[in-house]
Length: 100
Image (tube, rainbow, N blue to C red; front, side):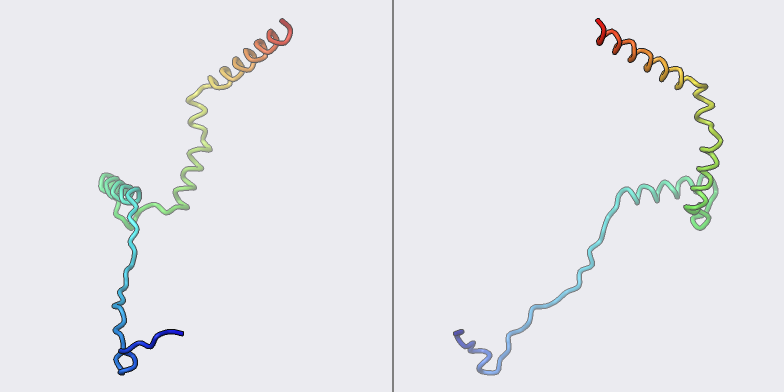
């Protein structure tokens, strides 16, 4: 059994605690740097914020650039020669380890 509270018996009610509204804020330094960079590049190119490239336009432009094969042309087949050399070297090492 609980002891009676005197203020409530006399008609006094306890004051409720003050309530407040707190909206948490999220700070993203990476996003802030990116926005500053977009603005700086936009100023250099003379592009306003509302003319910024949309995501789909950017994707299609990147696909066109990648499909042209500019990186592969610049390499000039050097990568294939290196891979072939490494494969032959590994087979030679494996052969000598197994049979000698």
